[in-house]
Image 1 (cartoon, rainbow, N blue to C red):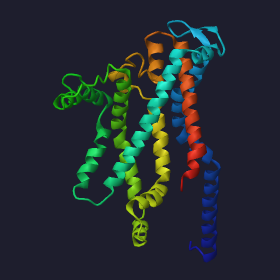
Image 2 (cartoon, rainbow, N blue to C red; image 1 turned 30 degrees about the vertical axis):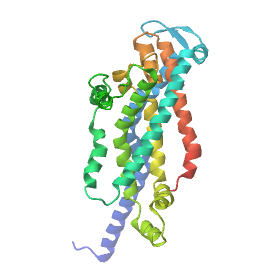
Image 3 (cartoon, rainbow, N blue to C red; image 1 turned 45 degrees about the horizontal axis):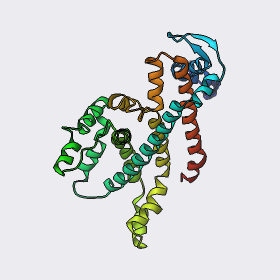
Image 4 (tube, one colour; image 1 turned 180 degrees about the horizontal axis):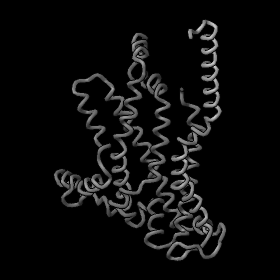
Length: 314
């Protein structure tokens, strides 16, 4: 039987209607599809982020035995005891000094090196590779390398001091020098990532802006402060936030190089939490310290978003 034009039009209309119904049903069930894809991530976040956080908050309000089981409810007494503790306040002060020094030095050196590496100079590719090599170095290897550098008898700095007939510096036994040694090592470790991120941002700045500035007679320093910095301000904001958070969480280098010493000069909050929990078995105290550290990191992050983000040019 031959199909007439009318019947073919009716069939095409039915197909279009069925397609529309299918699209409508798909849109109505979008939330189920989104939950299907978000479900695994939410499950992992719940198991490994939110549950440990609330569990730590719960334990911080109790006394615990050596197995970490809660015994006596103390409320906020653990927090009061910590804040009134001279050792804890010393760790907090040392941590703030360390975070400030690491953040300022890492961002400043990374920005200067990235700006230099963005220039069209002969052999600049070699320097780009050298500046970013620390990204491929593990914490253990970096610690071994710098322990050799800081060795008081055979280390690089000791050999230089002997060659110049200077008094060798006790890097890891003097409290002030130990903090400086940890800062140098951390900056060296973080510099590769910061350098690469800032270099990519600088190279994405339109070249026409610099050409117009050169026509106007602007110097290189004026171009840097008036063009480069405003254009890469979103990346600087990102790098500063990441660097501060990572500095607060520094653990591996401190554990391998100084172990919090000498005389608690490098006993950062994270390392203090580790020692109180796994050396002393005081899980209530370590949980309280962990919550305080979380609040401090959240406070500094909020300050950044509150004040620094206003100066970001999107």
